[in-house]
Length: 249
Image 1 (tube, rainbow, N blue to C red):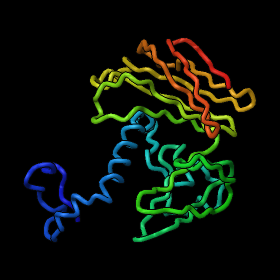
Image 2 (cartoon, helix red, strand yellow):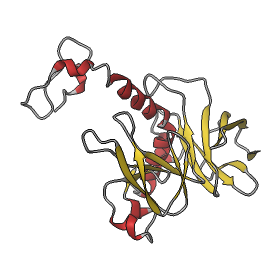
Image 3 (cartoon, rainbow, N blue to C red):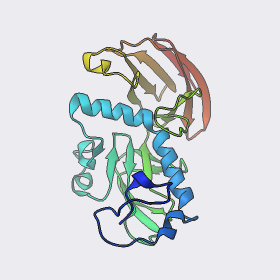
Image 4 (cartoon, rainbow, N blue to C red):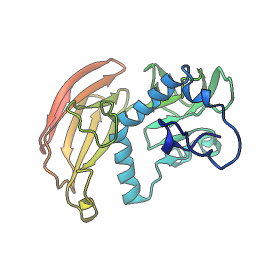
């Protein structure tokens, strides 16, 4: 059991989750754990544009944020029955480590090329691989062709940022992504106003990323993106001003 969070930082840590039980309060300041927690807090903020987009998708279609493997790989017999890993949106495969003291985790990758989120190492799918883990590593994999927007680290969700969003493009296959944004404050999106929707398409043959204002884009926006082609780690800047634009590698 852990303490409920609203009293953290004060002299009183709040009631225990679910009531009862006892927690060693020294563990709340475990120097081995705090950097790991910080790492994943920061990842949560970096993934805000991705999470915001799949939340918009859920609002429009009912497609959940957390998805069983078979939802995107319905013809894969292993994906149909596997229950200890999942997709976050369509482009992040998450394999939680749930065994205490584990030093490795078996992960099933469907057909295609997959990249390790942490190392950018590529793996051929259609098989189970073994990922070496420790307490700090949550196995995460990305399919070739994926386009994932990454923001700079914030200290809170509404904090203004001046640095551009990075678009991570994982080479090896054609891919697409629709990025959704709005003013983050009002309810105008409910009436189709104040939305910035950008269709992104990666063409593997020409190694070109194209950005096009999507149907329903009602918010004028001029944005700078850093496009990072992986696993080559090549970066280029692209400016979007509500007209089609592309960048080649």
